[in-house]
Length: 82
Image (cartoon, rainbow, N blue to C red):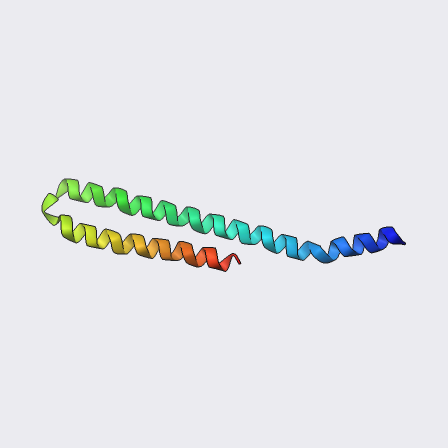
């Protein structure tokens, strides 16, 4: 009888463990996606400045805005994992 109650108790905690795993996956993918987005924006901004150094200020401004948006999505994914 004790073995059955132990199995039922373990089954009752299984959904909570699965939710923790999926939350971790969500946070990991969101953080990885934000990192890739920031890296792409940075590399393209450097490439654009290399082609047209006179537009440095405009490119810097747009690059910072785009990086902030990418990081914002990463933070939303991080908070959604909880």
